[in-house]
Length: 283
Image 1 (cartoon, rainbow, N blue to C red):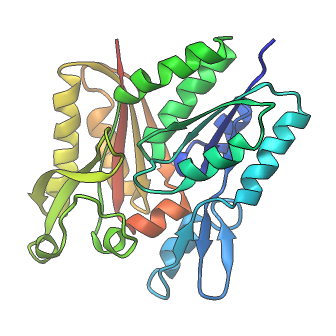
Image 2 (tube, rainbow, N blue to C red; image 1 turned 135 degrees about the vertical axis):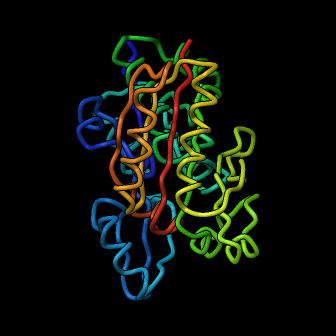
């Protein structure tokens, strides 16, 4: 009899209620200041990170190998036979390789590490859909085989208040920045399904235009397909609500969800002002 555990990380931005409901294990990234270190979400809030950015911009690191080891050891003790881990894009972090190494040290567990090639609720949708398959009694092999096609049905688009933090954090990917900042160009940023890195989907000038373009981008997708829609923000709740209200009643929206603030570690790299939309294409 299979007993399948599901692991993710704090950048998936799923609520604690959902994590508890499906018994999803979560690894915490680290947020590092000059004189102290915090575990993402557990020991520091997004608000604290944003409020202190003008004093110090922290760095970050992936969850510790000790934390990963602890989870795998506890799963063995709890009688799990199989493990699925869905983690932040390998194009943005080393967590995928790290957890793969730890998983190989536990041969008693049949483990599959899956690269979401996404972030925030784009990653979270994948985790949630996987959790539902486990709850429905789908077997391990079926779920593992379903994940690549599921990943192709998920997209994430977002805008940021400034590209400064993506540049400082080295997460800029294929998004060009300097001249655009001077001209108040606000790119709509997406994540490449092939390498899991950011790229510029399109460019507009000004904050309001960028929010409207985000809405228009989703409208174009919804004209062709039915979708579940998820909206999230980084210290920009008002703008997120504006985008959500524009999208939620569009044709072909099968369900809509207004999420809260993204994880503190994601906020470190995106800075204040992020508004994002993640979607799941439905058949």
